[in-house]
Length: 193
Image 1 (cartoon, rainbow, N blue to C red):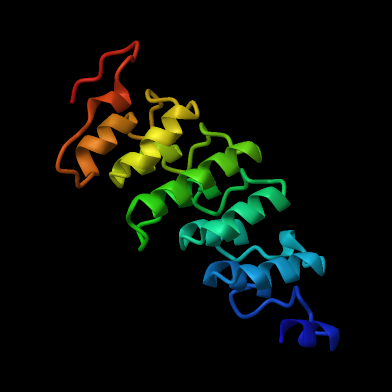
Image 2: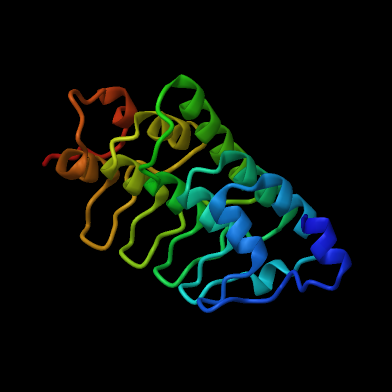
C-alpha cells in the first residue's frame, strides 16, 4: 500500500498538524518496514522533526521500538540531536517505561545502547535538567541499562542540575527492592546521601 501511494506521488515528507511526517509516524508506531521504505525513497529525516524537537529516532526510543531505533541509528548521523527539553535518543531510551520486561527485552534495549554509541552517541550529554542517560536510567531503576551504560563508559560521578550523581537519583527515585552496589563501586569520590 505504501508503495502504491508513493508511486502515485504521495509526499513522504508531508507534515500533519503537529508537524509529524509519515517517517516520524511510522517510527513512533513501530512500523519498521514502512520506515525502511520511506528512508529508501529519500524521505528527509531532518524534515521529520516535530514541534517538540523530537526526531523519528527519539520516537522509536520513547516507544520501545528497538528494531527501528537500531535501523535509524545506523542510517542517520546525528544521534546526539536534542529535543526541546535537551534529551537525546539515549535519554529517551533510558526514560522508556513501557512493556517489554524480561531478559529478551532487556537484551534488546542494551543492543540499542551499543548501536547508539557505535553511531556516535555521547554518554555525557546532559538534558536541560543536567541529567545524563545514566541519571535517567538510575531514576527509573533500570539495572540492565545502568550496567550497560557503565560498561560503555558512562560517568558515575556526573552531577545534574541539582548537584546529584546517578546514585543520588537511584536512591531518591528508583523503585527497587534492592540496590546492587557493584554499579557505583570503584569511585574516586565517596558519595553519602
